[in-house]
Length: 211
Image: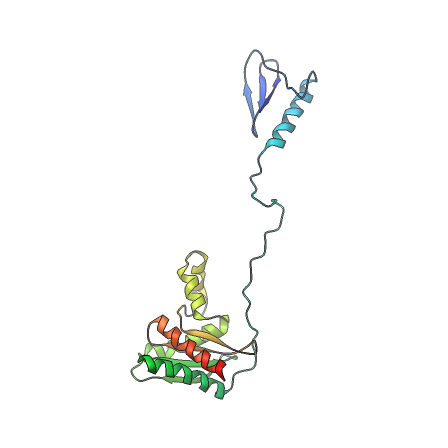
C-alpha cells in the first residue's frame, strides 16, 4: 500500500521504506491527508512509510545487550597431590597400557606445575618422553582434558585459535586430576595413537577415583 502527494510538476510516491519521484500530470491525493496542505500530506506519508518499515535488526532490539556466552565451569587450583596419589594414577595407567601391549610414557604433575612421577614403558618412542609431560602441563594450565582442545581444533573456525596458545598440546591423552572439586595435578600419556593414549590416561584417572 502507498500514498501519493501532488507536488505541482509531479508527485512523491511513498512506498516501502523510500520515496520515488514520479512525474505525471495527475496524482491521487493522500487518503489520510484529505485536503491538508502539501507539507502536512508529506509528513503523513513519511509517517506511514516509517511505520511500515520492516525490522531488519533481528529478533532482539538493536540497543539490547548481547547475551553473555556460557562459561565452562573449571575447578580451582588446590594443594599439590601427594606421591602416593601419583603412584595410584601411574599404576592404573600402566596396567591399561600393558593389558593392550601399548608402549607409552606416563607423566604426573602437581598443581604447582612440577613433575611428581614419570614412567616410560620399554620400547616407547623417544618423542613421547617430553610429549607426555607437555600433555600433563596442558591439562593443568588450561584446566581441561586434551580432548577438549583437540575437538576445538577439529571444529575449525574460532577453534583454530588453540594453535596460538603457549605450551599447549592439542592431542588426546591428558586429564586434570581433581580431589574434592579442586585441581591437585594432571596426567599426560603419550606413545600410541591419541585415542589409545586417552584410554590409558582415563584408566589412570579412574584408578585415583577408586581409592
